[in-house]
Length: 316
Image (tube, rainbow, N blue to C red; front, side, top):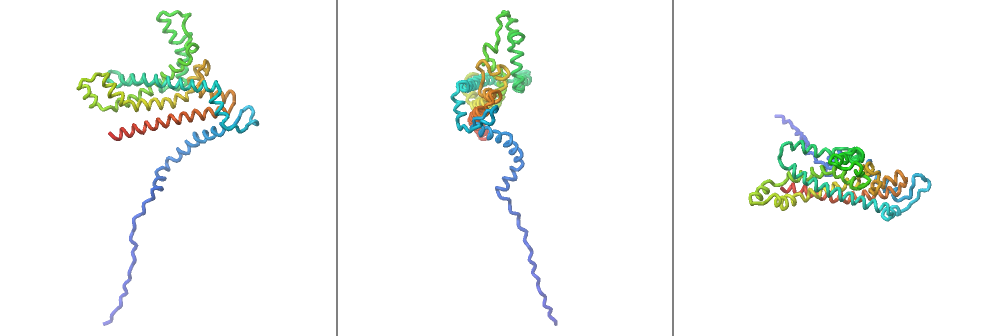
């Protein structure tokens, strides 16, 4: 019997191994990659011009004499903070911002409480109340300047004449009360913004808690004072901070209604005058940097308030 030696061939089969998962850093970059174009665009549009403005603010640079440009250090910032006209524009900016934000919050709170109730035509009323905020700021300022404030054919003087006022004694609203005229137009435009924020806070209240308080005999004022107002504190803070960020940079109303005259020139308008009229690039850049720094400080507090609101909503 012939023994055939059979050779056993051992095949080494490669056991498939699971793919190694991508590292956390790679996965994070893959998630953020779609956002890179928007980030690059934002840096190119906002950050690079700000860096250029920051550099120019350290130079004594008048556009009419480009060859006389020299490094000035912090002299432009010192002039912004010590020059009487610039210092007055800073005070005007603070007064304008504080008065508009406070008045808009109070009126917006009242309108939000009204719209929180159910009544016929509430949707139409809400749309009409939001409309001023949707107008272009320049168009809103022109509306107030020509349609309402004009001493010859304005609506305000027309109403005074209709109720029996002397046509010869009708006031020139912009000349008599210039800062108040700007404040009224801004309050009209920004009250809907405050109203929407406060209305969102009202609609997030705990209805069961309100009903329990009413069953215990609490009046409407007691419910508002002890339940509604503490609940709206964060929303009021958010409205005040966001409104301050925008109103402190307001230029349209001041330029359109008074052209910065009669003591109404705020800091953004002063920057415009320094840059486009006096051609003082360095001084205007320094004032602009101070406006941005102030806005960033306010925005930091606004982000903290928003974060706390999100945490409160998530904990419910």
